[in-house]
Length: 478
Image (cartoon, rainbow, N blue to C red):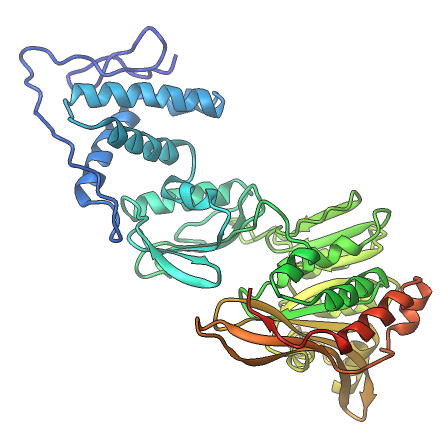
């Protein structure tokens, strides 16, 4: 039975169906006539009266239903039960609502009880890249590289905090005043970050990096203008030739998306181990082991860091190690892995150019407490990393692969590199979209040529390099 309490003057009585329904009012208890205001949907969002009405009905629903029993039902059955009770509550309170208004209200309340509340319609859209909730009253989204305000809002910060806790608890994490920062993920792999009061002054702040339901592939990146067909072929050869790759770029530039695309070139027979703070990589190979870090518990114990995972990888007989994002001293262990027989390993990091990516790797190792001479670190980097791929989000919102750069060697104390493929910005069109071109730098035989020959890929590589030199110059923004 879903009914958890008997009927009282303030509380509805149980129905025979097992779900508590709203009872008719006694003659001595006049029912106030509450007329629901029209639901306003405009650029400013719904009216305050809508949220007041929803709050009233939601409070009555919570008093009338056993959430523990409701949780045992499948999603469709639970929604039907909630719809029945909400209909009874609306009748009891004599609210005058159109069918469309009532359906809108029902959908909102079902999302509150069973899902992620006001976030549900945003999560259902596949064209949204990021959802940014700045407290209960303001929610922004990123669509096609541009940030825009939405009419979505929460009842209050308490509702927003409850949804944040619901999200992070699904992956065994917590967020509260004692632990106000948390990284988590949604069931579809979307990355979630929560920062709560007292650190977030204006209320809980929730950021969701969404992933498309349809995984992007290199051919799709070619259609979007992120890279040319010849450039995509070069990237495929790099992946198949088991080059050690770093993908560098700024926040939101598409590093993880590109990493997913590159992993498509990994052979089905290879054993791949991934290490991430919040599991978001979506590899298609059958032999993949996914590892995820763990924060400390309430007592400050039990933390498992990225470095712990990377070190443990080496004992798991990997053929490739993929680190979702290199942030700290795990850079040392990743370089060690790349240099000890785990060719084809990959990782991403935040940097604005290939040269800066090399400096950041060295800085992260130094900050980890390793007291190694600078030249020793540079030698380790040169011996470990073969190719750096730079991605960038341009000011018009488009994303481009701007550099494919080889690490050549060390001359004195300077790491030498050479660009194989570049993106030049030529200007913009009348709509403000950037026009540019991908071009080969004329390197006919890159350093990884012999590696490509070993994997029988040298003919494809040569054809792609030749075509890139003679191909079309201008490539407009997608």
